[in-house]
Amino acid sequence: MAIVLAIETSCDETAAAIVNNCHVCSSVVSSQISLHRQYGGVVPEMASREHVAIVNAAISQAMQSAHLNWSEIDGIAVTSAPGLVGALLVGLSAAKTLAVLHHKPFLGVHHLEGHIYASYLTDPTLQPPFLCLLVSGGHTSLIFVKNCGDYETLGQTRDDAAGEAFDKVARLLDLGYPGGPAIDLLAAQGNPQRFPLPEGQISLPGGVYHPYDTSFSGLKTAVLRLVQKLEQTGQVPLPVADLAASFQAAVVRALTRRAIACALDYGLGTIVVGGGVAANRGLRQQLQQAAALHNLHVLFPPMQFCTDNAAMIACAAADHLNRGHCSPLTLGVQSRLAIADVMQLYQPD
Ligand code: KG4
Ligand code: ZN
Image 1 (cartoon, protein in one colour):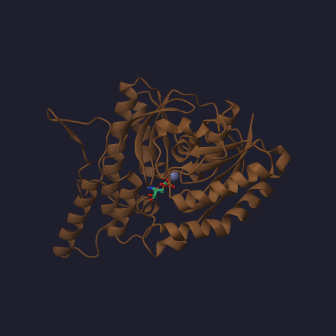
Image 2 (cartoon, helix red, strand yellow):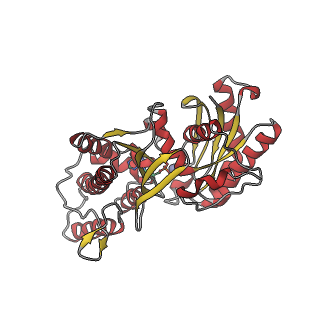
Image 3 (cartoon, helix red, strand yellow):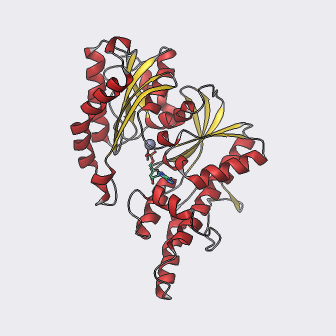
């Protein structure tokens, strides 16, 4: 059993949390969305500066609400890859300092491994092997989870990530940033069948499609052309709810079809969903329904742990710590790191 304090600063959320294995003792998330909204996306240098300003307060608040003192903490963890380098460095420096100061084991955590572990916060009895559908602002992957630290990517996006597609289409429809939650809300009031949109498929030699890879850039262009056509034919104001619903339905169809096919092909009975897009209500509903038809079990993280947070990072770190893994204090940050290479983070000095 491990009590872990984790820090997450890989993008635009400054977060600190304490977990006792899969039980969340405290979780603080300070979002920078209002800061970046005016630019339509995350400005890396501003994100780093904001993390510097807020990270100490987030850590203190996490400690206070957990009612724990430093002697009760078994390890200090931080997201060390992948992400924005300047942003990651803020969390890394804070975590290393605390680890040295309080003589605690230090653990770097792969951000995507954190998203996988977010579902352990829903069901602590979850056991690999299972399939993870990871859908965030930067990634869209199907990951075969074999064990803690043992991952194989079976499918991924060839261009835009699912969350990125939501954000770009929301910008096109003037719905603000981040686009996922806005489209999700509007889609609930729209007709998903009004505009047939392509789900995006990757052609392979021999006239077949890649069964697990996705492509969302064609879908985004199709929405752009559709909006231009509607505007040219005087259909303004645009039917944004129907556009949002039709777009969301195409993304959900693409993700659901691939996740189910992959789980069945690999004989995996459980699909775990992770990343910001796991909060999407359309995806939650459709994937559950489709999985039930094939006797597959689907698990989503609690709503507040779908988007970036430190509780999921602490949960992943606790599992590593229980297995005796920890990172050298010489560990640096990495803007990119394949999930298959996560054990690189735990090599000794
Ligand atoms: O996992 P996350 O917080 O950050 C990354 O690691 O990228 O994911 C953020 C992404 C954004 O693109 C956001 O638009 C999307 O998740 N998102 C959603 C929803 N909530 C957040 N997409 C669809 N529906 C939602 N309800
Ligand atoms: Zn994330």
